[in-house]
Image 1: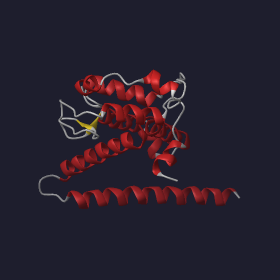
Image 2 (image 1 turned 90 degrees about the vertical axis):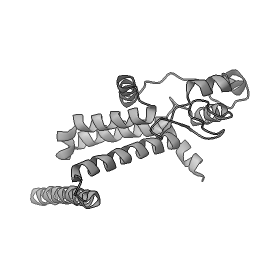
Image 3 (image 1 turned 90 degrees about the horizontal axis):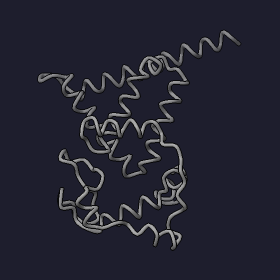
Image 4 (image 1 turned 45 degrees about the vertical axis):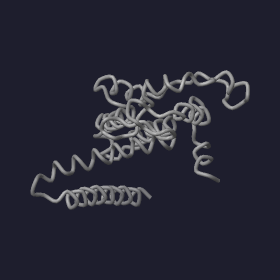
Length: 202
């Protein structure tokens, strides 16, 4: 099974993976006059991240032939499905800061985590399930390429934050190692405590 096929099993009904692929290929037939992205390559934001196709590139490529694709059976019948809240939060962040989609997704994810931080810190199952559902909805909506963009943005932001926390004379790599070990130790202690409680109850 190819990577594309594996992702196909996870795509939700509100976003057809085949439709996304066709539309992306259609717009990328031409170079982007805005960011000079070559044909077949993704558009880039001023910060260098992959982003949605720029308006001038979409205009240059022309309107995708949806009706023709539909007649050929290349795309399924459009179905109205509820939009996940995390996508609405991403769009709100994009409008608020004037940023591209991948950075908006990253902001939405971080804000979601901050809003539920007490429950996450306590290991509350309901809170963690809600976070999992939000992240899964985002990944399914963006597909493998869009999800990779979000991961790139998030890891870049984490690296930048770690560098700032370490200070000019600090070691950011050592700080990151300490933070990860601290989180792992916390989770392990929490699991051991839960295990002791279960043993007592039996």
